[in-house]
Length: 173
Image (cartoon, rainbow, N blue to C red; front, side, top):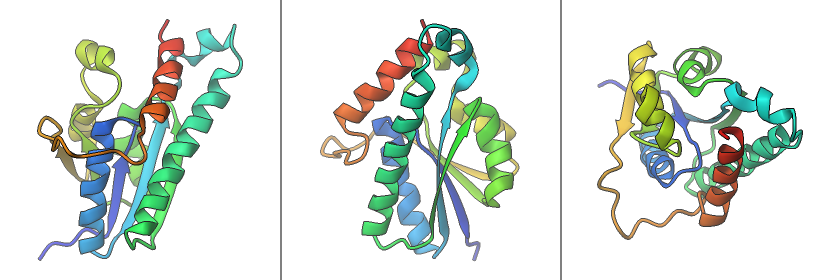
């Protein structure tokens, strides 16, 4: 039987990413595996924004820290003991399937089929598509179209999501 020993779950603060997190958490527990939670701060548009708002990178870092701390706490509540967190900077499409896999030794990547940035997904394709195309390890793309209506987020709360969307809007002006 094939067992995965090192799960890498990509989260962005969306409801869809939290649904994927729960799936990854369950699979990691069943495999007695390590779970690494990653959030990549997309810095490609920061340079122009930071010219007039130097707080943007600090706020993006704080958002990522809150997000990952929340997921780590949830994983510990569910009995996971081997949990790591990574905040990285750059393009999620490039970092997750290559650099993050090398850094963590992940043997599977888990991500949602859609996330926060609908405009980018429409123009250049989704992060999950890029991960599938570029990863050298197995990828589980969690379908998010049929999330149960009674699924309630505990980490990606409305307040946290609004905070993340505000940062995203400021960097995409």
